[in-house]
Image (tube, rainbow, N blue to C red; front, side, top):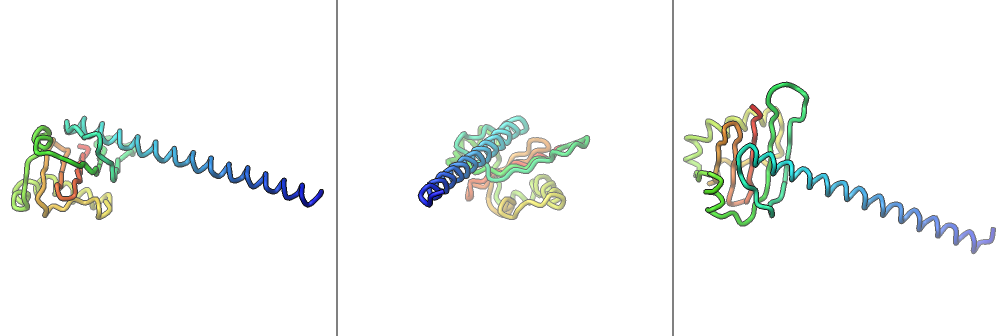
Length: 163
């Protein structure tokens, strides 16, 4: 085989391999994007079902963990979203209550914080997704689902205890 022909074959094989790698990367990226989109949709649907909170469409899912085991009883769910441009009207429409740190000592320490503490002993939540209970915030108790909105970070934490 001539050197020129050999060089041409190697170039063609290189181009085919390159195209294959680019296609595979695009395919994997598409799976990743669709997976994140589905997780966001599941989180928003679950929050609406459990709390009746209307999540704005420009929100972003930061973290989500769900108990998907096959055991009887409750299945916890923990979602953290960024919600920008939250108004007092949105908070009121969704029945959030304002609380400074002194206020949380009276109510939430016995509810959301207590449930969260026991949950975090079993399921380790990364530190960046743990609510800062000492910040002024808004909270909502929907039975066994607790919501915590921090206006300083724009983070909404919704923890469904599953029971």
